[in-house]
Image 1 (tube, rainbow, N blue to C red):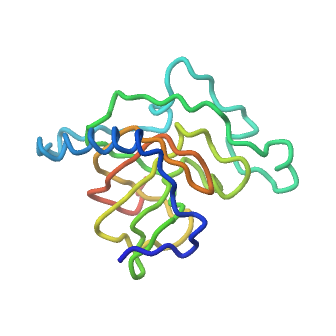
Image 2: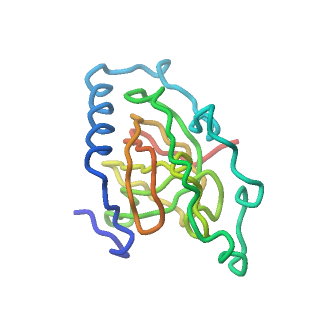
Length: 177
């Protein structure tokens, strides 16, 4: 049974976006993609070409005393649909949401240490909701990992941030440079 250590971080899902994302992910499961069909993504791949880059002051950790000036998540919620229903591989850092026993079953994959915990979180197109049937024995907050699985757009809202993408993980491994 899945439980959340802090019920305030349990995701509230925009059902339409989630259903569309889940439907595209289900299409991949039926096709049985091979390892050579895995698309390696970088975080910049998730930002639409017409979207502006993040301002420099938001590309790293924000000090708590600067939070008032930067208290809102950037509104740039445009997402790319190029990889909907594809198997992708993306590296990032874990912000755990749900656990089963000692393993993480749901987490936000973020592009840098401090994202979603410090204010403000990255824009939705820089956050990925990851779920896994096999709990991942995480070493802790912001552990670097590489996740492989079915990818899609899915608007998800949590207490921490609005999230633009979803990834159903088949494989989660510690990040290796």
